[in-house]
Image (cartoon, rainbow, N blue to C red; front, side, top):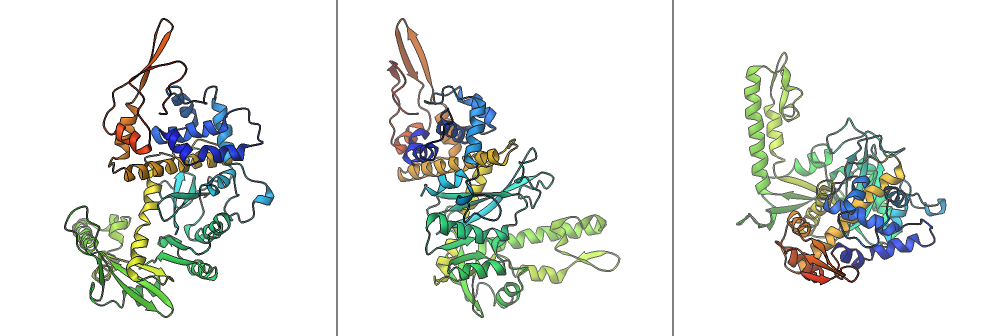
Length: 466
């Protein structure tokens, strides 16, 4: 089934095209496909992928050995020649994987970090701000770009000490050069925003919708949030309060101008109630802890925001609590688009697609552990997770078009349960298929495949893709 998706997306053809003229002496495209399939179904190291392959019928993979996987990963992460480095970001070279991405096909962008069990290559493995809460380990930064349909468009792999705020402009320029993008609107979260970033995006003539830091940016804190009347007074309702659990979360918006800067303030009444409840719970715990002694409270980050130094002891900062209450349920966007406030807010909310993709990279596809020692093989290893997510998104599209509602773990369980056995009697060989379970038949149908017959004479190999 995944072979059908792989070929439908043209991934095999793209890889073979870039491999033309290279004399590797083994099926590089097949080694990459096995790695991607292993990443979807089980995940783990390339050594584990080689062992896993032995239990499945995967045409064209016969004769592949472990060193072939290493060479395939190194090819994907191989830096291009000097003349092909034009437009490379300042954080890393252009590689073979970039050429593959450019053939795959506005944009949503976010980053995450992946830590290493070892040193993490010659240049990629660096200590930096860990989003996995593992500052003790070396890491790399992974940037992911999605198109407006939620398809993974390209990925960026940088040293682990690369700051988010420095990545947005190089990625925007890279998109313009590689994909011939003309007019574009960049959507990114508040970690990407800085005065220099905004100036460069506007200088390039690009539109943007960026999350703003409500507390640390003085203009947003004082001129936007600080001058709001009673919330949600003056806000336009975009999505009302939920009547059912599956309804979209409530949303109200208000446009605010500070000089030539345009902001859209968004308010979620449901989130406001949760913020207030969480803060009350923290303060109640803090008051109780203060009665028992206050020295141990300073290291508690949740408490620290609510404390003040009252001479020889700590006390609850009532003024700070009142100040924090004005942020309940709010988030602020900075934009230079001509769109009405409601579309701006709704478009920004679609950034969850990137966040889900990054979460899938770490959970469903399980990119870690990473044991490779060279930058080239590390880049190839992580890029195979990107290709796995491309396949997963295409499967989601097929299931959605067919009206099939199924969680990925259920799909994977039911596909794994579909097995075949070889029986031989005299000169005759037969393939016997196991019974279909759960949503397996629906998934095959959604992809456009017929299930293999229960009993099939095996003149050579099974005739149906699986």
